[in-house]
Structure formats: C-alpha cells, structure tokens
Image (tube, rainbow, N blue to C red; front, side, top):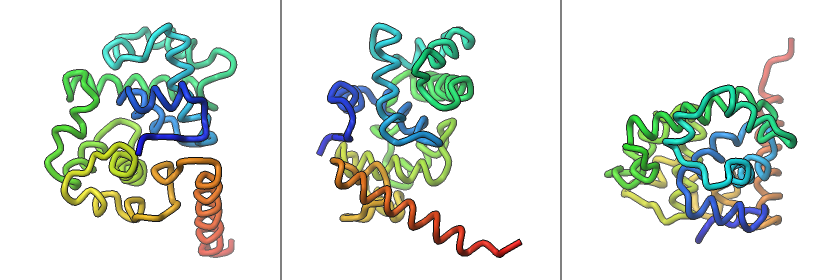
Length: 193
C-alpha cells in the first residue's frame, strides 16, 4: 500500500517515488504537525524547481539552503536547524550510500540491519528509526526478515502509533489520540516536584 497521507496528492506522489524526499520528511517530523513535515519535501521541490537530490543538497551553500527553508511559509518551525540537518542527511547518503537513498534498505540483509542503517542517519534516533522501518514495511513493502521486530511496537499489525499507520484522516486522528495518551501517561509517571 503506497503512502497516502492526508496531504496534497503531489506531496504523496513525491514521497512514493523519491526515497530522499521520504527520508527528508521523516527527518522533519518533529515539533511540527505531521502533515507539514511530510508536505515539506514537495514545497522544497517547488522552490528548487525540481525534485530534491541528495548530491545537490549536500553541495548546496548552507546559507542559501537556509534561505530556501526560511521563505514564507517556512518549511519547518526551525528552518535554520532543519536545513542543516537535511544537508547532513544528504551528505550521509552521498558519502555512505553513493548518493542512492534506496541503498539504505535495498542493501539491508535483515530487519535488524535495516534498523541499524536507518538509525545511523543524521537526525534519526532510536524511535524515528523504528518508525521509518515500520513505514517502509507497511507502506512500501520493504520487508527484510525481522523487519517487524526491528520496528518494535511500530511494526505491529493493526496499530495506530505512527505515520506508518496513517492512510486517511480517520487513521491520522487515531494516531494523534494514541500520542496524546502516551504523553499523558508519561506526564503522570513523572514524580511531582
């Protein structure tokens, strides 16, 4: 099942055909609404005049890239920091994967290996890497042996925990409810000061 987030069709199309755009969207998915993060690569493509390419972004003048990210409406709440993170991601793809983002998953022998490769990317931590492994498995049919285990609870079938489970407005609402419950539980678990 392809990625069908409740965003513009052009943005979904880009995420489905361009692995670097998908990795960029996942990287940007922090401290902004999910829809904004996953639509940002399409807006970046519009501003560049073509789909973003890891080699081009890696070599971009950092100040000019910040300017592109900062144009209104900004691509992220923190355009300067995120422009730098996207550029670091692009450099890692160029340096470690010969500029081909698909090699991150095509060259992975197992789910554990896939998780390790994603987790090694700049801007990706443990949770984001697990969510991305789940997204690849659930939406793009990238399923090396052990991918569900590598994705942790995000790989569970029938769950509504992350972007990997969103296919429409209803599932988006269910994921948001789950996240709110988790935040409330974490807050309740903290000792009072």
